[in-house]
Image (tube, rainbow, N blue to C red; front, side, top):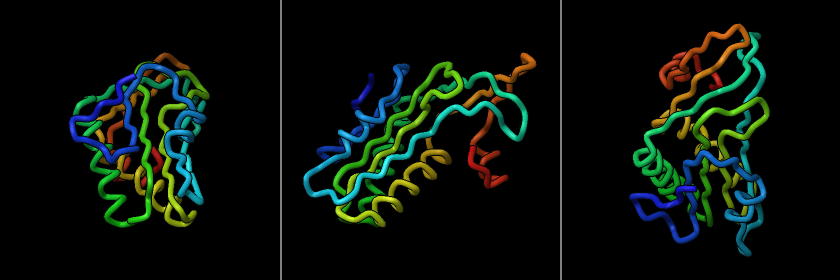
Length: 159
């Protein structure tokens, strides 16, 4: 698991791009802090269809050094808006993932739930649009298609 970021994260922030399966428990633990009143975790999983078309798996690729910098920037931006945030955790898988596997985890620890929810939403939305991570959908008919970040922005979908 790669945890180091070219930009030094806040003391307890944690960022990773990895081939290994992601753990909800680990993300929660990393975001937890005695000062928190809330830990909000967003788990993105591989679903079995897109727009009604059967998907059998997804494949993720990333430019890791830049993606980790984007994760660190997201955490910095969060702290400028929600100054009470204690911890930000962003982990993303790469490689081929099967239906039901976790592809991305974002966890935010904060004294108050409303800020934790807002910061977590900001983190995943910003990651989807700014991080150099690409997704290829593999269809049941054997075809596959790369999904671009630009397509997410144009359709305002939840890519």
